[in-house]
Length: 311
Ligand SMILES: [Zn+2]
Image (cartoon, rainbow, N blue to C red; front, side, top):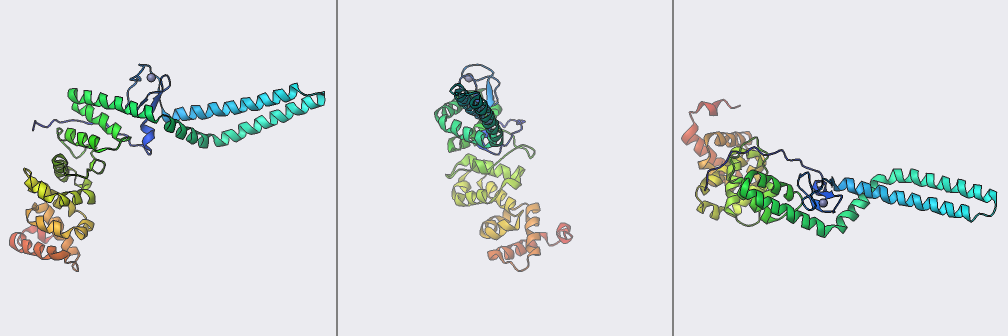
């Protein structure tokens, strides 16, 4: 393995809905999830968020409706026989158009949603093509600049959820020095199958960003325990995850046997954490974990001042 690089990742903006990351070119209708200024297909600076495009479409369709209303009024005026009829048609037509305009203003948001739905549905093929183009940008970037490659894949992953992209991101992350202050994530990167790079990544997170180790990751290392133990420093990954799990009582309740298997490998600071949990919950036996924690205490830490005044 090559030496890990220190990187400073660009901040990542999470959006509420996946489509909010999509932009469309006003000129050639290509889609992108990246942050480029110019459209990669036609080279123009005409990229706007899909929501803005949907609003434009909504306003345009409303404008057409108003135009039709005015045309109907005009026709009615033209076919009028008397002056009174002309005045009535004109006034009625104006009132209807005004009412329509008022109604449309109330409906703008609903209509925009409808237009967005229509736009996304009608552009499926072009969205996929756009994302393919984004992916080829990513693979070109990976060769030149791994950090940029990772950032591009992270954007694409907000729209496309598949294991190939997850795995590629994990591989790239393995090339970086991970730090606590980095915007890292685990759950969106989880895979079904055993993947040594993912196990290694989980092991590193257990060291630098323990709070990311949740049930899903704990279950993953439990399912693939045998495979992980065959890896170089596999035991370190397992005990690291066990050490991360003892930060919450919930995980000790859920996986006492797993923690029991690695309790002897826990560093003092993690063991102390578990010891405190055990002391605070005198009525829990946790399938033998409690006895083992007491045994370790008696063997190793009985005279340790840190264990006397934690309360
Ligand atoms: Zn374009």
